Image (cartoon, each protein chain N blue to C red):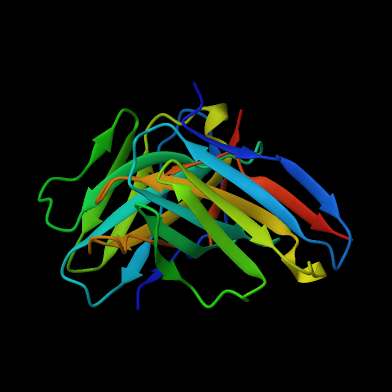
Amino acid sequence: DTAVSQTPKYLVTQMGNDKSIKCEQNLGHDTMYWYKQDSKKFLKIMFSYNNKELIINETVPNRFSPKSPDKAHLNLHINSLELGDSAVYFCASSQWRYEQYFGPGTRLTVT
Amino acid sequence: AQKITQTQPGMFVQEKEAVTLDCTYDTSDQSYGLFWYKQPSSGEMIFLIYQGSYDEQNATEGRYSLNFQKARKSANLVISASQLGDSAMYFCAMSQENFGNEKLTFGTGTRLTIIP
């Protein structure tokens, strides 16, 4: 059973479109995260949720809106996609003070 | 603010040799965690090892050990008896240990290539 899953794995879309990435974890963790990995492989936190409550919002453009319907799910919706949004987006989950488990990533390409 | 520095963008190591990947950090927090992750070419992020700032013993997990020197603010990863499958990007990361704020701050990574 996959611990942290993301769909889709690949997403190719045009500028201006709206898209969503879904994430689910079956580890029973309370906290979930979204990270962005750019073309230089640099990973940066975007958001974190603890028990469905937004805890961290790292000055991400408001075109990005996370939603957590329950503590096992954290989705990322992106409006009006731009070329600079092309990246790999990772979902992760953890319990306090312990390692974060990452999903397989979603490679987003905006053309 | 927390900062992680990895000064080795790339390393080449002969198979079966030990390898040390450098990581230094900067933080004003008293309580923090240090992590190493591996990212193979397939892209997934694999957790390797964790060290808490108050842990007196260096963490070990199989062939991985973390050489934690708190006064020097360093958390180097040591891989013993390297294997071809160890070729990957390696990221050092740290987190604050404040409940609900455990975001990981990552370094820029080191690309390790194991030579047969």
